[in-house]
Length: 426
Ligand SMILES: Cc1cc2nc3c(=O)[nH]c(=O)nc-3n(C[C@H](O)[C@H](O)[C@H](O)COP(=O)(O)OP(=O)(O)OC[C@H]3O[C@@H](n4cnc5c(N)ncnc54)[C@H](O)[C@@H]3O)c2cc1C
Image 1 (spheres, rainbow, N blue to C red):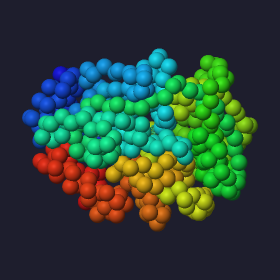
Image 2: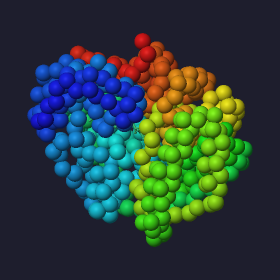
Image 3: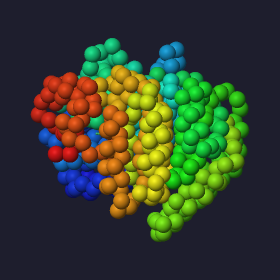
Image 4: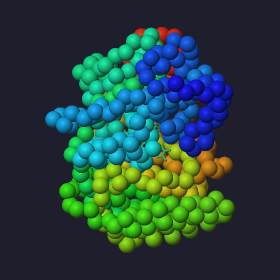
């Protein structure tokens, strides 16, 4: 097992920087048990793509990237068994080679499967839940060092999956996959009012829908997607031009310009939106369409709102953030997800409108985040665990109906509190 001592641990966005005495990269379950026996304050890391400081005060961080559990496929049931540290891009490649795919994905593929599942990571689609809903069975080690395998019938299955590593270490996941499929993506712009009016219709009409907004533009960019078996209609050059030249180089240049000259941001955002006015259609493999090019480093807070109130929430959101009190140099994203049963899921028993604030590093970030949090709480929204928020444990209790059940389970599986506390304000 590789061991690194006294490291500076940084997350992807570099807003979290902690000095950590040990980083362990176990290769097998014995290595893991060894760390568990010899250390009293342990945190897991997938790819460090969370903004929340989920690693605070850790004495030892465990990264499962080298855990030697090979993936297996049951072609009859379309279930795959994956090692927890596998990255989503590795899984996509492995499945694609075998004519299979994950049912739904978020917007990047750099996360580990266990890390993404543990924070409730989601994509977008009215009939699709967060990534954890694709899981059929989980194998994990608790704070006593006991190994458990829980299937979906086990009473604690729905507590273990979205648990931020606070109950124990997930080592293996059985995932329900589907035959490989393509997605036809139609991109167009429309005025905000029209998007609000059509929102409910669109989420039923399209398999996947996401909306991008560059405030204070009065128009939004709509990505309306159908699952299809139509052949690929996007050449490598078109993919490169759109995903690399425009979305990475072009967009990054505009973000940098907006950083240097903040007063130009509203104008830049209007220009960027206008560039998208010409409707665009493409068909490609599902995981290529779900994924967006890696964005520039930025900050995020994202909350799960009740979908049934989408019209009024979206109208208020537009009013609140188009008045130039804050300036934005990043895309704001609107998505939806189906209700689920995971105790700590932001979509627990509630179809969800995902709404957030995304901005590049900026001195207005803290007040913007706080402003959005007040807005979100006024609609009884629940925070995304992997992103930024500022709530006490008491406030988390009121957001998450099964928070106290979860805490009870924590004292059962992790009585010595080896896996730490929630990311919460004191
Ligand atoms: C550019 C970017 C785009 C993103 N897009 C989306 C998106 O589209 N949708 C969305 O919902 N989120 C999105 N996120 C957030 C991201 O998906 C989550 O924060 C996710 O948890 C990160 O996965 P990770 O592997 O990096 O986990 P980490 O951030 O490293 O860890 C997250 C949590 O998982 C726990 N954990 C990790 N491994 C294990 C394990 N083996 N057992 C138990 N617990 C474990 C950790 O302890 C920690 O609490 C995005 C983040 C970035 C940076």
